[in-house]
Length: 140
Image 1 (cartoon, rainbow, N blue to C red):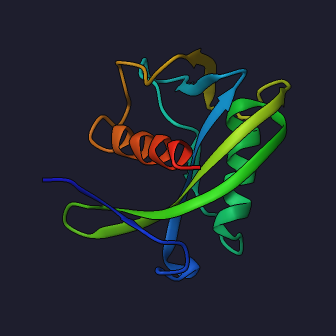
Image 2 (image 1 turned 90 degrees about the vertical axis):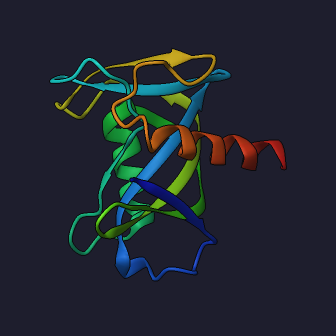
């Protein structure tokens, strides 16, 4: 059984965060990425590189996986995914103002959606992250 939990920023030390995930919008649409080797959609994000802060990871991954050039990036909370062990990530929201070319050679394409797409790469995780961001945006 997979469990997803949420924590307030600062509750989990940044050194324990392995991932950064960025739920993103552009022109009132949600952006999802498709990896070249898959036919499913995923939220932009990736692993924290050695010596990199989770927020810097979020910025880098957003640019690489969506082509974002101008954006407002907001860290929202920490999330964890637990099966046998628990791993942590930074969950962000980005409102993208300007897109350029894709920089990440792993991403085959991006697309724009009115709501979460049906065919997700991580269907046990992504809907919970998406719902958390939508909840945050609705309470602003």
